[in-house]
Image (cartoon, rainbow, N blue to C red; front, side):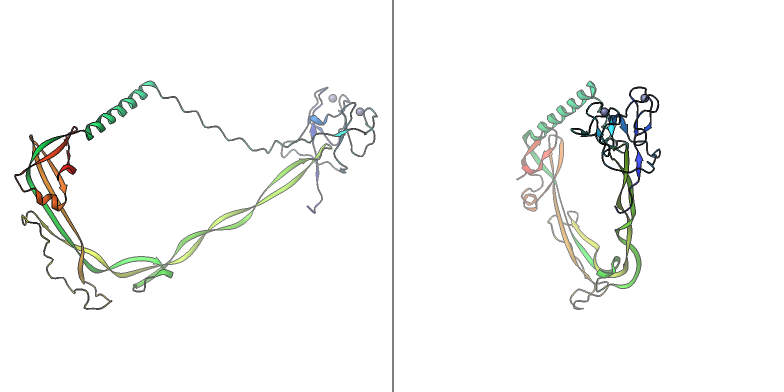
Length: 330
Ligand SMILES: [Zn+2]
Ligand SMILES: [Zn+2]
């Protein structure tokens, strides 16, 4: 701090005659009753009501008279109140500035205690879930008849199509075409934007205080632009699905795909638009079971499905909740 410090008056109240707001640096005695200033009753003024201590010369923290407790300037060899010497005295206590102290966070409101009936409802719900859980895992064995058998197989046919896509221009795919670009926000960056400053007030211990300016940098976020490329690109897309099911044949078989257009391979690495190829295949097998007037449908694997012809019987586990345990089909 190269600049000259400005001193401001601390305030004090007279404990003897109750006069308030006297100046700590200028009024060493109460102007009303003459009582000596008590350093323990010094305090900081409200922000904005600070009075500068004109022509104040700082010589050090006051010393407190060991006999009459009066504060005396560090430059004084004897107490201005009772004449006692400075030897064996101690400096006056420094006052902490509480005006700018942070406000404590509010404590969260206590949660209202749950009423009795709410607890009862939750208790009953939990009990019901436990009972249903037990019933779900408790099974009995019965004999069911295979009343219906279904299967379905399908193959996806993919076609090379022109699709719209976008990417940051720096990572534009090599085979993109019909490219246009636009400026878009890609990220943000932190930019220094001035300073946030406040004053900290420091008791000098002689009835005055000084202000120290504390500053920290302030930031704002700024958008970072980049070029976004919009383009067309040729990609394999699922175009159609061919299906076969138990409506077509009793024995499962893959559907015929017919003739694929512009079959891959003839054009080398560059595949022409409209070319087709086989995509993923899916198959599913279902058995419908009947026992005691009830009917269930189980999705099973192909080997299990094959083992159970129509109108045959099979042992199966039925849950207490009414469903069937499809995993028990062997
Ligand atoms: Zn007084
Ligand atoms: Zn004294």
